[in-house]
Image 1 (spheres, rainbow, N blue to C red):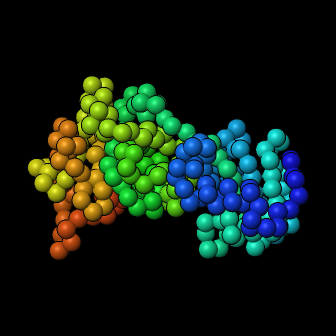
Image 2: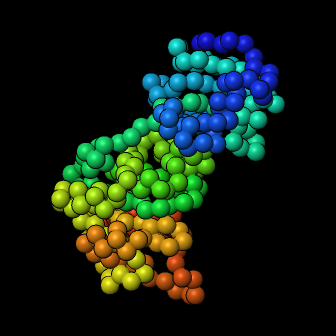
Length: 261
Protein backbone atom coordinates (compact mmCIF):
# COMPACT_ATOMS: atom_id res chain seq x y z
CA UNK A 1 0.00 0.00 0.00
CA UNK A 2 1.20 3.47 -0.88
CA UNK A 3 0.19 6.37 1.32
CA UNK A 4 1.66 9.79 0.77
CA UNK A 5 0.09 11.23 3.91
CA UNK A 6 -3.23 12.77 4.75
CA UNK A 7 -4.75 15.34 2.40
CA UNK A 8 -6.22 18.23 4.37
CA UNK A 9 -7.13 20.80 1.72
CA UNK A 10 -9.91 20.90 -0.88
CA UNK A 11 -7.44 22.84 -3.02
CA UNK A 12 -5.18 19.81 -3.34
CA UNK A 13 -4.64 18.84 -6.98
CA UNK A 14 -5.71 15.23 -6.41
CA UNK A 15 -8.94 16.36 -4.77
CA UNK A 16 -9.67 18.75 -7.63
CA UNK A 17 -9.09 15.87 -10.04
CA UNK A 18 -11.55 13.68 -8.10
CA UNK A 19 -14.21 16.38 -8.28
CA UNK A 20 -13.59 16.73 -12.01
CA UNK A 21 -13.91 13.00 -12.59
CA UNK A 22 -17.15 12.98 -10.63
CA UNK A 23 -18.76 15.85 -12.52
CA UNK A 24 -17.39 15.69 -16.07
CA UNK A 25 -18.03 12.85 -18.53
CA UNK A 26 -15.39 14.37 -20.80
CA UNK A 27 -12.78 14.19 -18.04
CA UNK A 28 -13.72 10.58 -17.30
CA UNK A 29 -13.57 9.56 -20.94
CA UNK A 30 -10.28 11.32 -21.60
CA UNK A 31 -8.71 9.58 -18.60
CA UNK A 32 -10.49 6.29 -19.33
CA UNK A 33 -11.63 5.94 -15.70
CA UNK A 34 -14.67 6.46 -13.48
CA UNK A 35 -15.41 6.75 -9.77
CA UNK A 36 -17.08 4.08 -7.65
CA UNK A 37 -18.10 5.08 -4.14
CA UNK A 38 -18.76 2.87 -1.15
CA UNK A 39 -17.39 -0.34 0.38
CA UNK A 40 -19.98 -2.58 -1.27
CA UNK A 41 -19.04 -1.80 -4.85
CA UNK A 42 -15.37 -1.54 -3.90
CA UNK A 43 -15.36 -5.20 -2.90
CA UNK A 44 -16.63 -6.14 -6.37
CA UNK A 45 -14.02 -4.26 -8.42
CA UNK A 46 -11.39 -6.55 -9.98
CA UNK A 47 -8.01 -5.61 -8.57
CA UNK A 48 -6.52 -5.13 -12.04
CA UNK A 49 -9.12 -2.45 -12.82
CA UNK A 50 -8.24 -0.24 -9.85
CA UNK A 51 -6.01 2.78 -10.51
CA UNK A 52 -6.43 4.62 -7.20
CA UNK A 53 -8.16 4.52 -3.83
CA UNK A 54 -9.25 7.47 -1.69
CA UNK A 55 -10.51 6.98 1.87
CA UNK A 56 -11.69 9.30 4.63
CA UNK A 57 -9.80 9.58 7.88
CA UNK A 58 -12.67 8.05 9.87
CA UNK A 59 -13.12 5.19 7.38
CA UNK A 60 -9.46 4.30 7.70
CA UNK A 61 -9.69 4.41 11.50
CA UNK A 62 -12.81 2.21 11.63
CA UNK A 63 -11.90 -0.24 8.90
CA UNK A 64 -8.48 -1.68 9.48
CA UNK A 65 -7.83 -3.46 6.20
CA UNK A 66 -5.22 -4.19 3.59
CA UNK A 67 -5.54 -2.72 0.12
CA UNK A 68 -4.26 -4.18 -3.15
CA UNK A 69 -0.51 -3.88 -3.44
CA UNK A 70 0.65 -1.34 -5.99
CA UNK A 71 -2.60 0.67 -5.98
CA UNK A 72 -2.07 4.21 -4.60
CA UNK A 73 -4.12 4.90 -1.45
CA UNK A 74 -4.76 8.46 -0.31
CA UNK A 75 -6.26 9.39 3.07
CA UNK A 76 -8.40 12.55 3.19
CA UNK A 77 -9.81 14.34 6.21
CA UNK A 78 -13.54 13.73 6.55
CA UNK A 79 -14.27 17.30 5.45
CA UNK A 80 -12.16 17.00 2.30
CA UNK A 81 -13.59 13.58 1.49
CA UNK A 82 -17.13 14.94 1.79
CA UNK A 83 -16.15 17.70 -0.66
CA UNK A 84 -14.88 15.15 -3.19
CA UNK A 85 -17.69 12.62 -2.81
CA UNK A 86 -20.86 12.75 -4.91
CA UNK A 87 -23.25 11.55 -2.20
CA UNK A 88 -24.84 13.57 0.59
CA UNK A 89 -23.79 10.94 3.12
CA UNK A 90 -20.30 9.85 2.03
CA UNK A 91 -19.40 6.20 2.63
CA UNK A 92 -15.72 6.82 3.21
CA UNK A 93 -14.12 5.15 0.19
CA UNK A 94 -13.80 6.20 -3.45
CA UNK A 95 -12.18 4.01 -6.07
CA UNK A 96 -10.82 5.18 -9.41
CA UNK A 97 -11.64 2.40 -11.87
CA UNK A 98 -10.69 1.71 -15.48
CA UNK A 99 -13.50 2.03 -18.00
CA UNK A 100 -14.36 -0.87 -20.29
CA UNK A 101 -15.73 -0.62 -23.82
CA UNK A 102 -17.20 -3.91 -24.97
CA UNK A 103 -16.87 -5.13 -28.55
CA UNK A 104 -19.74 -6.25 -30.78
CA UNK A 105 -18.46 -9.80 -30.48
CA UNK A 106 -18.51 -9.60 -26.70
CA UNK A 107 -22.12 -8.44 -26.41
CA UNK A 108 -23.32 -11.10 -28.85
CA UNK A 109 -21.11 -13.97 -27.67
CA UNK A 110 -23.83 -16.38 -26.52
CA UNK A 111 -25.78 -19.24 -28.05
CA UNK A 112 -28.93 -17.08 -27.91
CA UNK A 113 -27.81 -13.45 -27.40
CA UNK A 114 -30.13 -11.25 -25.36
CA UNK A 115 -29.57 -7.53 -25.78
CA UNK A 116 -30.92 -4.11 -24.96
CA UNK A 117 -30.45 -1.34 -27.51
CA UNK A 118 -30.90 1.97 -25.71
CA UNK A 119 -31.51 5.23 -27.56
CA UNK A 120 -31.18 8.64 -25.88
CA UNK A 121 -31.78 7.43 -22.31
CA UNK A 122 -31.29 10.69 -20.42
CA UNK A 123 -31.76 9.91 -16.74
CA UNK A 124 -28.59 8.45 -15.13
CA UNK A 125 -30.62 6.83 -12.34
CA UNK A 126 -32.90 5.11 -14.88
CA UNK A 127 -29.86 3.90 -16.81
CA UNK A 128 -28.32 2.47 -13.64
CA UNK A 129 -31.56 0.65 -12.84
CA UNK A 130 -31.64 -0.77 -16.37
CA UNK A 131 -28.08 -2.06 -16.02
CA UNK A 132 -28.92 -3.70 -12.70
CA UNK A 133 -32.11 -5.29 -14.06
CA UNK A 134 -30.30 -6.40 -17.21
CA UNK A 135 -27.78 -8.37 -15.19
CA UNK A 136 -30.52 -9.94 -13.04
CA UNK A 137 -32.58 -10.94 -16.11
CA UNK A 138 -29.67 -12.49 -18.00
CA UNK A 139 -29.00 -9.84 -20.64
CA UNK A 140 -25.77 -10.68 -22.47
CA UNK A 141 -24.98 -7.14 -23.54
CA UNK A 142 -26.18 -3.58 -24.07
CA UNK A 143 -25.79 -1.30 -27.07
CA UNK A 144 -26.31 2.38 -26.26
CA UNK A 145 -26.31 5.61 -28.24
CA UNK A 146 -23.58 8.08 -27.39
CA UNK A 147 -26.18 10.81 -26.82
CA UNK A 148 -27.55 8.87 -23.84
CA UNK A 149 -26.55 9.48 -20.24
CA UNK A 150 -22.99 8.45 -19.44
CA UNK A 151 -22.90 4.90 -18.10
CA UNK A 152 -20.09 6.05 -15.79
CA UNK A 153 -21.99 8.97 -14.31
CA UNK A 154 -21.80 8.49 -10.50
CA UNK A 155 -25.62 8.24 -10.30
CA UNK A 156 -25.61 5.52 -12.97
CA UNK A 157 -22.83 3.64 -11.19
CA UNK A 158 -24.72 3.77 -7.87
CA UNK A 159 -28.03 2.81 -9.46
CA UNK A 160 -26.45 -0.21 -11.12
CA UNK A 161 -25.38 -1.60 -7.73
CA UNK A 162 -22.19 -2.96 -9.29
CA UNK A 163 -23.73 -4.25 -12.54
CA UNK A 164 -21.84 -1.59 -14.50
CA UNK A 165 -18.72 -3.63 -13.71
CA UNK A 166 -20.13 -6.81 -15.24
CA UNK A 167 -22.64 -6.09 -18.02
CA UNK A 168 -20.86 -5.56 -21.38
CA UNK A 169 -21.83 -2.20 -22.89
CA UNK A 170 -21.04 -0.99 -26.40
CA UNK A 171 -21.51 2.74 -27.07
CA UNK A 172 -22.24 3.59 -30.70
CA UNK A 173 -22.56 6.76 -32.79
CA UNK A 174 -25.05 5.08 -35.13
CA UNK A 175 -27.49 2.62 -33.56
CA UNK A 176 -29.10 1.86 -36.91
CA UNK A 177 -25.78 0.41 -38.05
CA UNK A 178 -25.60 -1.58 -34.81
CA UNK A 179 -29.09 -2.98 -35.38
CA UNK A 180 -28.16 -3.92 -38.94
CA UNK A 181 -25.22 -5.91 -37.55
CA UNK A 182 -27.48 -7.61 -35.01
CA UNK A 183 -29.93 -8.67 -37.72
CA UNK A 184 -27.10 -9.97 -39.90
CA UNK A 185 -26.05 -12.07 -36.90
CA UNK A 186 -29.47 -13.72 -36.81
CA UNK A 187 -30.78 -11.74 -33.84
CA UNK A 188 -34.46 -10.81 -33.98
CA UNK A 189 -35.03 -7.14 -33.13
CA UNK A 190 -38.15 -5.93 -31.29
CA UNK A 191 -39.13 -2.30 -30.80
CA UNK A 192 -41.06 -1.35 -27.68
CA UNK A 193 -43.84 0.86 -29.03
CA UNK A 194 -47.32 2.01 -28.09
CA UNK A 195 -48.24 1.26 -31.71
CA UNK A 196 -47.11 -2.37 -31.55
CA UNK A 197 -49.46 -4.81 -33.24
CA UNK A 198 -48.88 -7.60 -30.72
CA UNK A 199 -48.56 -7.52 -26.94
CA UNK A 200 -45.01 -8.27 -25.79
CA UNK A 201 -46.11 -11.59 -24.24
CA UNK A 202 -47.38 -12.89 -27.59
CA UNK A 203 -43.91 -13.14 -29.11
CA UNK A 204 -41.21 -15.81 -28.74
CA UNK A 205 -37.84 -14.75 -27.35
CA UNK A 206 -36.03 -18.08 -26.98
CA UNK A 207 -33.74 -17.32 -29.92
CA UNK A 208 -31.37 -14.37 -30.30
CA UNK A 209 -33.33 -11.31 -29.12
CA UNK A 210 -32.77 -7.57 -28.92
CA UNK A 211 -35.13 -4.92 -27.57
CA UNK A 212 -35.05 -1.31 -28.75
CA UNK A 213 -35.85 1.07 -25.89
CA UNK A 214 -36.25 4.80 -26.44
CA UNK A 215 -35.90 7.92 -24.32
CA UNK A 216 -38.10 8.62 -21.33
CA UNK A 217 -39.75 11.61 -22.98
CA UNK A 218 -40.14 10.84 -26.69
CA UNK A 219 -39.56 7.12 -27.04
CA UNK A 220 -37.76 5.64 -30.04
CA UNK A 221 -36.90 7.73 -33.06
CA UNK A 222 -38.81 6.77 -36.21
CA UNK A 223 -35.51 5.92 -37.92
CA UNK A 224 -34.49 3.38 -35.30
CA UNK A 225 -37.97 2.01 -34.76
CA UNK A 226 -38.21 1.28 -38.48
CA UNK A 227 -35.18 -1.01 -38.17
CA UNK A 228 -37.07 -3.46 -35.94
CA UNK A 229 -38.39 -6.78 -37.20
CA UNK A 230 -41.42 -6.49 -34.94
CA UNK A 231 -43.02 -3.75 -32.83
CA UNK A 232 -44.49 -4.91 -29.53
CA UNK A 233 -46.59 -3.07 -26.98
CA UNK A 234 -47.01 -3.36 -23.25
CA UNK A 235 -50.77 -3.29 -22.54
CA UNK A 236 -51.75 -0.25 -20.50
CA UNK A 237 -54.67 0.33 -18.12
CA UNK A 238 -55.82 3.61 -16.64
CA UNK A 239 -54.94 7.00 -18.06
CA UNK A 240 -51.15 6.94 -17.93
CA UNK A 241 -49.65 7.25 -21.42
CA UNK A 242 -46.65 4.99 -20.93
CA UNK A 243 -44.31 3.31 -18.48
CA UNK A 244 -41.02 4.74 -17.33
CA UNK A 245 -38.23 3.48 -19.65
CA UNK A 246 -36.60 1.47 -16.86
CA UNK A 247 -39.93 -0.10 -15.87
CA UNK A 248 -40.82 -0.94 -19.47
CA UNK A 249 -37.46 -2.55 -20.10
CA UNK A 250 -37.81 -4.59 -16.90
CA UNK A 251 -41.19 -5.97 -18.06
CA UNK A 252 -39.69 -6.99 -21.41
CA UNK A 253 -36.48 -8.43 -19.97
CA UNK A 254 -38.29 -10.62 -17.49
CA UNK A 255 -40.60 -12.00 -20.18
CA UNK A 256 -37.47 -13.21 -21.96
CA UNK A 257 -36.18 -14.62 -18.69
CA UNK A 258 -39.49 -16.39 -18.09
CA UNK A 259 -39.54 -17.95 -21.52
CA UNK A 260 -35.96 -19.13 -21.26
CA UNK A 261 -36.24 -20.68 -17.80
